[in-house]
Image (cartoon, rainbow, N blue to C red; front, side, top):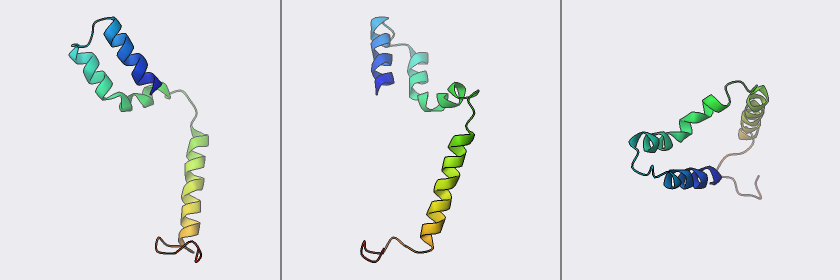
Length: 72
């Protein structure tokens, strides 16, 4: 939210609302993340994701989406 607010403010301040390239860059802003985190070690994130997947697998052995809260 903060990024979008600041982006739009800069675009308006410099009169770039009709700039096609900047509009396209904003439209694909979700793909920028790899550029920002290229040099950041992400092993901890992968470990967290792996842990979450392991927990989901564990609980799927005992529960299913049709169980009520009491049955769970």
